[in-house]
Length: 213
Ligand code: G6P
Ligand code: MG
Image (cartoon, rainbow, N blue to C red; front, side):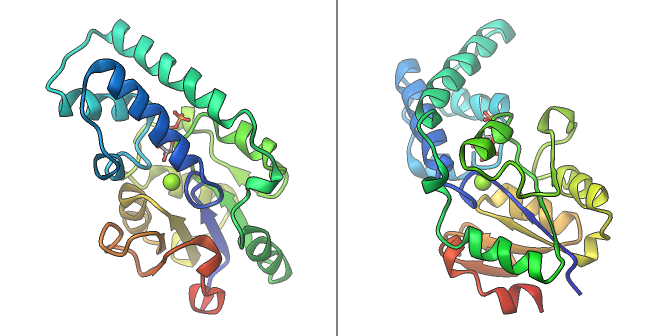
């Protein structure tokens, strides 16, 4: 039976996936590269530098390592301005109810986000003490779709992967959860997340009975 639930952050707990898109879109405009929400789907769950690489590839552009670092810093500064005003009101509907139910059932909860901004966001949302373990993405060597981050959180929670559920809005994230040997819950578009075991359009639509049984 399920003993742990491991949440992605951006796009599962709050709407920061949209802020990531806005910040990348502005950077793409700055670089003169066409970039759409469809392109962005493939970048969800992908770390900062690899996301930039994907945009440069779309535009057929190349940059030095130092230039790429500067572009990543520019995007992150823009992103941090966008998230600066976040508050507990920005926690997606349904999240608090899910956390309360899991607590009653004694099911452990963790966060597996590729974002280096995750701890700051959880703090702004008032959720910094809500999870037993939050992965430090700077210590993860292999990014999603590799299962490392989900396996790291499961190990920290001391729960075998077969008894874990992972919740993701990103195709790369769902792939990572499945590769970890966990049950995968997709939040969003069924076409994008077809590898998931169950798909719900938004976090508040999660059927907890189905997810945990
Ligand atoms: C998450 C988001 C990605 C983002 C990545 C890195 O995985 O889904 O869109 O690129 O985190 O976030 P960061 O805040 O470290 O740039
Ligand atoms: Mg996400």
